[in-house]
Structure formats: structure tokens, C-alpha cells
Length: 397
Image 1 (cartoon, rainbow, N blue to C red):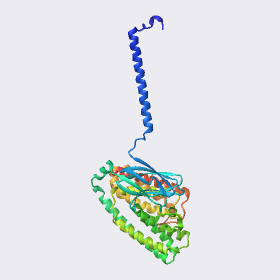
Image 2 (image 1 turned 180 degrees about the horizontal axis):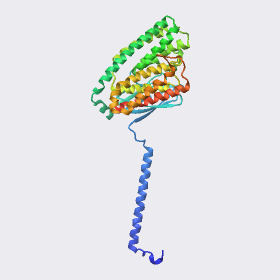
Image 3 (image 1 turned 30 degrees about the vertical axis):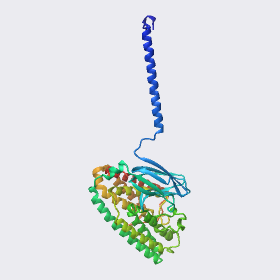
């Protein structure tokens, strides 16, 4: 720039004003940077915004840490850390009723679960089924007050009534199948008892979405050996899997008559409880989704490890959960047609995936290999995820 084109130097008064303006601008910039730094620090320290509470429970030996927990009513996310030496399950219990659970938490690993809890006092399991239990206190909250004020949902009366009939009929079928199994065991006929065991256990699977809510009966009827201290030799190991072990991996029917008698008695008690069970609308899809998720978690290792009846069991689970899905289908078709279509398609696909093991109306007693288990587990988990969306789509949560 030529000297003649430069602006004239500022006068003394203008120079002072300019310096004041520059200083003020610098102060504003500094203040802005300080505010940004402070806000960033607060953001780093504060937990991410969430509508849910979060609790971590660590299992060490035979205790929970913490063993006494208080949370507000509504949704809470629990992280269960297994620092014991064995795989474990973790349950929230309302008396004998299972509210939420996670199974097969391997040593050194953790799993998370989100539970929608109502005000009250609950028990929590701490590792093995025989271990002392912790306590969970749920205090009233704005969410629970709003829930209590929700109007009656008359649209679900028909579906709930039909499902009660289904439960009663299937429970009768279960009792008849267990009676035939017990008769064959008392007669000492292991060859006859083996297919009868498979049929009886499949019948239990059809009502398992509600049967597993009763923790004491589900433990006696269907708990696997690994959840007991002495495994197959543990005196508390009973029910279907104790009979399965004797028939398929043990000494035939030897010693199984008392186990079969107790199985029948427990099934009779289950029938009574199912008749009086209060089933709110959200429990239908919720229980089906939870059972399918647990089934997917168990499939890689297998449940009927002695009889190799995994395909038969899975068919029973699909029959029981699909009944629930079919009853909700008319409501879901109006509220979320794409979700209803996805659920129906996934049920059909899972049914076809079991075709290699079908033998007419029954299933071949052949093992499901590792790759097949993983593939089936992925399909079941995807279906559980879709069913897990139903309550939100229907305005039930």
C-alpha cells in the first residue's frame, strides 16, 4: 500500500477508545472460554441424561454387593457382575413371583437388564438358588402415581379371557402328560418313559411364559443341575431335569418314582396358581419377550442336555409365545401394522427352521450342533426384540 493511501493515525481520544474496545473484546472472549471450560467440566462429571436409574450389583461368593438396594418406582437398569466361580442367575422376586431375571452369567462377566418396578419390597437372588437373598426396596415416584391413575383397558378383556382358557387347557394337558410319564416310571419302563418325558416337558414349555413367574415351583419343576451346589448329586435337584438325567444319562427309572410323584404334585399346585393368576395386559407380550430372550441365551449351551430334545422344547416355546402374539395381533395391526407383520414373519421363519428335526408331529432325538444352536439363538433373539416393542406400540408402558 502506498503511503498516501494509508488512513490517518487516530487521535489521542480515538486511540484510547480503541484500546478500551479491544480490551473489552478480549475480556468477553476470555469469559466465553471460561464458561465453555466450566460447562465442559460439568458435562464430563455429570452422568449422561437418562430417564432410567442405574444400579450395579456384584456377586461375590454367596452374597450380593450391595445386598440392600433402594430405587424409585419406574424403570431401573441393573448391571449384574459375576465375580464368583460359577455361572449364575439373578432374579428379582415378589414373594415367589419372578419379576425379572438373567440367566447364564458366566464367571468374570456381566449382564444388564432393565426392569419396570412398582412400589414395594422385593427379594434378589445372589448366585446359587440356595444362597441367602438380598433386598430391593422400590419407593413411590411420579411414574408410579401416573401408572396407578391409568384407566381400565377394556380392549384387552377378550384377549385376556381367551388366554386364561388356553392356560387352563394346556395345564391340564401338562398334568395328563406328566401322569403318563409317572406311570411308565413306576412300571420301570424306561423305553416308554423317554418319549413321554419329551412330550411332558414340551407341554410345560407352552405355558412357561406364566409358569416361570412362580419362582419356587419353577425351581422345583424346571431348574437345571448347574444351579445347585452339588449339581446332579444335589438333593434339591428335582423335577423335569432330574427325571431327564435318570432316563437318558443315568440308570433308567431307578430312584425316579418319588421324583415323578413330586413332579405331579407340583404341577397340580401350578394349575391352582394359574387359575388365580392376575394377568395385566402388559404381562402378555412382556412375559413372552422375556422367555424368548432367556431361551436365546440358553440355546448355545442347551437345556435338555441329556435327552437332546432342544427342537421339541423350542417348538413348545414357540407355540406358547405365538398364542400370546396371535391374541394381541388384532390390536397391534391397528396400532403398528409393520411390527405385527414382522412378528408374524419371524414366527413363521422359526417354525421352518425346526423342519430338519421334525418327524411327523414329533421330533427326532438327534442333537442340535453348535452352529445350528447359534443360528437358532439369533433368530429367537430377534423375535424377542420385536415382541419387546409391543407394549410400547400399544401404549402399555
